[in-house]
Amino acid sequence: MNITAQTQIKSSEYPEGFLSESQVLKIQTVTKLSGSVAFSSGALPPQNGKSSVYHVSIAASDSTNDIDDATVTLNLPNSNNFDPTTINAAESGKVTYDRNTRKLTWSLGKLTLTPVILTLEKAYILLWWLILVLQTLGS
Figure 1 (tube, rainbow, N blue to C red):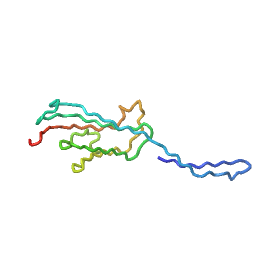
Figure 2: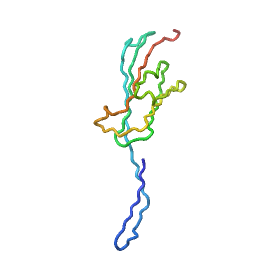
Figure 3: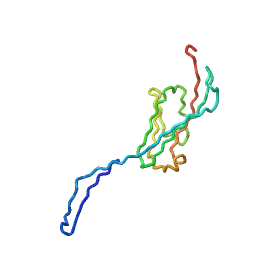
């Protein structure tokens, strides 16, 4: 975000005043994206031909300024078993997934200021289940 400002100095001796050149102040915002993967059920460690289910969580928060039209794009490299229907209901309408590019796009809309103390309570959270089935080459 940029803020542009000009300074004008006036006095009783010079009521028209002096106008400075425009100054641009750049304001930075601090966003945080964190994630976790936790084993849920199935084979642990993963075994050939058996399913292992993991719970994936991604959280986005902002601690300085609101951000309009915030978007998170993730590349899911081994996503053959990714099932978009397992995304949590609160965020499912904001997520698109392209199987050809393996890109998951999460459109947050307005990412509002989240004070550091409240980060876990007010973060935007995307959850889904990942089912992994190992297959040896030639199987």
